[in-house]
Image (cartoon, rainbow, N blue to C red; front, side, top):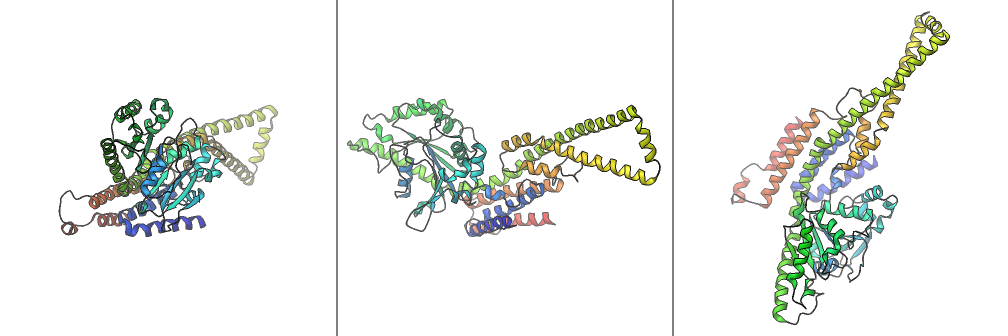
Length: 496
């Protein structure tokens, strides 16, 4: 009960924050609550969990890159404060989550501060780490830290600075955190170091930072940045260096999209030639302005991401989770019938064999037929023992599917407990002939469909908030019924 109170308090706190900031996302939280009820009924979620806590509600910007690519310097310049350590060697081996604080003194908090708070990314990431690297989940402080900073540019968003990326040296758990971070982010800045003239030697690094991102449906959130381009000023060959990197990225499939070239205004080399310096600074300032512009827009992208997560979760339950559970039930039913046939067949053969060999079967039959009491006792023993044996065989068949269920759950894009839902669907009072998982029916299907439609309406509300294709004045548009009101009316009609 305490765990339920904790999740309820967290959701109420989130709703209180969103009530003034973004009413559309407030409605999204309430829709996540309805989706949770579906999952609770089916056993897909424990009542101490919520789909709303599986996504970060703050706009999130992640910064990846190779060692000494200037990520920390970029962050310090962006925040206009020396928050992150920087240098030519790897100076930080942790993922650092940076958020705003009114306290002018920066604070560094341990990784458990992130692992235990659903408002931040990496909530319960220790469980994910434990799955891929046993024993590492308890060492969460060795992987993560939370830093606060009193920078106006941080208000309303979160930055994540990753340790320098070297695919050969990375442990599996670190790669898992990297992938998790990328999945959650609204914007990902991928840094490369222009001082390394042979990008082909970084094949493994490019494979993970480029090849695994270009085919994603959200590939537009990746910005590829060639940093420290000022080092080419001595030979005045930025075009050659840029071309070499573009060829390397092209070999890994990146043939479109913006490729930025920048360098730090505070940590650059001195360019003596005025015209050359102006040319470099002009290109740098233009690209930095575009990058900073995208970073300023993450709040908008965050709103669409969260609504998309609501729709995606509802669709995945209907289109992938339910079929997986249905297939598991079919496999389980087949195995139970086979076990019943084999075991009860062997028992029947054994009884007949014993009766035929020593002639005692006739004596037992005579005793049974002596009175109704004997008949009742015999029938009760046969039915009770047979049912108990049948339940044991059902349980054995269910346990035999544990490995298959684990693989199916791991392949699903949503975090649910497929084994718990399957267990709920195979309880003793559930008929072996039931084809649908527990909690699944027409009503549940209609509810998921309504949630998907509601997510579409949330997108329309966001479009109305951030765009105005018709060019009409707000006072004219206000005369028409709002999308939010229509959503409430739809919800009310569904409840009736």
